[in-house]
Image 1 (cartoon, chains in turn purple, orange):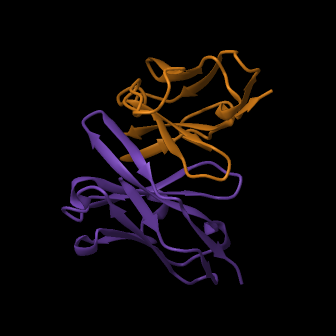
Image 2: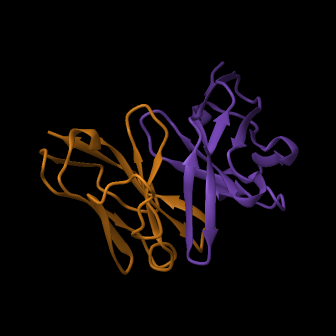
Length: 121
Length: 110
């Protein structure tokens, strides 16, 4: 079945970087976008950006421009999201999600279980 | 402050019909389709409705959506206890060149 399996929880100090992985299975990895969405405790969903695993093209939310990088290793069907200069406000659960879109429509149909990133001194 | 506006909470008794609104603007809901996600407690979000009114396989037809202009509403009929969850609307935003979410609505089944 189609699934996205994410890497385990991380604890980081302020100023450090974190790299979360998302391994796809059950479908052709290069045929669908991978999005990253985060959720702080008790808060709503916040979209961070997308990556096309075929071309490597990316698009980031303005809030994260300059701090986030989305990459992939197509040979192992895995996408990565790296966030740098971490601060306490980055403490959240980070989800990867498969994206489908075209003109006028875009949605995320399969989600990973999430990776908890805690930033604390 | 979310780009799409939802009420923070909604409630109903089993069997009732409840609606959750989602308001946007011409750059998102007004020009692109709306999606809804359901997040049960302590789980990842799940796609509930896509492309305005399409249900993925397995989603019961108790869930439906209406859309007009820059607003949309999710309706849940025959409310069940398992519907207790957070619901988020989302859409592509042409001016922000990305996905925007509503702040989420916590549905309580009384």
